[in-house]
Image (cartoon, rainbow, N blue to C red; front, side, top):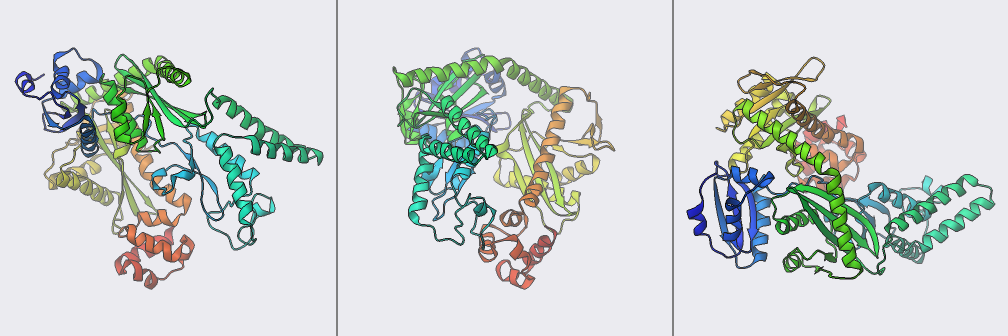
Amino acid sequence: MKDFKEKLSLVPTKPGSYQMKNKDGVIIYVGKAKNLQRRLRSYFTRTVTGKTKMLVDDIDDFDYIVTSSELESLILEITLIKKYDPKYNILLRDDKSYPYIELTNDKYPTLKIVRNVHRKKNKNHLYGPYPNVAAARKTVNTVNRIYPLRKCDKLKKDLCLYYHINECLGYCKKDIPKETIDNMRKEIISFLKGDPTIISKKIEEEMNIASEALNFERALELKEMLDDINTTLKKQKIDLNNNYNFDLVNFYYDNNYLGIELFFIRQGLLFGRHNEIISSMGDFDNEITEYLIKFYDKGILPNELVIPLELDKELLESYFNIKVTQPVKGKIKKLVDLAKENAKEKMDLEKETLKRNDDERLKAVDELSKLLGIKDLHRIESFDNSHLFGTFYVGGMVVFDDFLPNKDLYRKYKISTEVKDDLGAMKEVLYRRYFKVLMEETYKPDLIVMDGGELQIRVANEILESLNLDIPIIGLVKDKNHRTNHIMNSKYEILDVDKDSKLFLFLTRIQDEVHRYAITYHRNIKAKGALSSVLDVVPGIGEVRKKELMKKYGSLKKMKEASIEDLTKIVGSDTSKKLYEYLKEV
């Protein structure tokens, strides 16, 4: 570890953001502090373990930027994290966004599950989040069975099956009074907010009618539906005022791990919970603040956030611009304590498994570093291609940090329609990826993993040489049964790696993940048959042209019927030929 004593003495005691750098000058960690000097000294003057020790061992220099307030330092910290994606900042293990239920505000409303809530202009019609996806689907199915809402995305030209089984009012043909729709909407909203009274009464009435008509199968189905509602609400019920709506967070720390627990309270009900365990640097307040910012980037901010006394209330309130409270007694304080107990309980259950997994990962990273002669090996990028009927290639890139997937950095590539083979596709993807690294001076990987042997490595060597970039490469060579058989380095030498080793296992996981990621791109397009998805994959079609095509044709079927001349009017002659050829294949 370098001696920073003289440099530390010059650091001011003011608030600001600091950036740790490795020997290559790459930013590997960004933090903030109320007192920059005290915080920076803590890294080099105390005994550190776990993730903090790894960071300190990797630090070759540091910079800092003084700010006028802690809020400014937080905003600067988050901006720099988004820009540089430092490898030691928090990596959310569970990166998925939770679903919400949307009751659309259309003339004829629909009820559906949505995930990408940031695309929604009006968030007042969203209910959730639902950490339990199955519960969300069951809720939507129940409401759709009881209320004859519109079921189709767009009105059909004639009455469909849903009308004939009494699950739709036939909006496409019938003149439905606005009052009828408004009453349905009001009752559904009441149920989604946690009041089951009206919908339970409706189910009981239908159950009695079915029973009197000797339709016992339908009566049993309705009884099970009613039981599900009562069981769910019983589990959600907590002793709070039914007007309470907030998110609550607490944490538990043990042995370099930080357990975070979130409760979602809606109308006095525990709608759901989210928990996660992350490797910690010991700076709880800063880490949880960063974690919450990343978490709410994927969802909707609550009207109120409840936190324990250990966290910075004013900072969170200023950053999120919402009400933040820290109860010291009463029912909500008991709920804060319960969240901490839940965080501890999860930590006790998973701590040893997490530690063992982390130890295995880091041991595998160390083994690979020694095998390749790379001192600091952390970030790995891997590539694969997929195609449709031998044409229209797409590429995928996955990123792993210390053998953990970093899904925020995954990338998809549309490939030129002139490309007709795997190697040509790989050349284009690699060139585009690393030309961008060169031009934007972004973080380059410590290692590239190719999904193949000598031919794939030659392509990678050729592209990197043309860009004057020096990045180590290995290839995962398959046998005749398409199973990974051995590993080859950039000099086309076979590396001695035990097939039963953890290193071999982690490398094949990367190979499996990049293959899954690339092939899923095309599978989703074919499975959905969606016009929007098809247009995403055709080179030369950006957002503007995509919107114009969708506005003119509206469906994949209608676009397939269009001539090249018609398509040329919107996308030009070159792109229209590519699009016309592609449409014949899907």
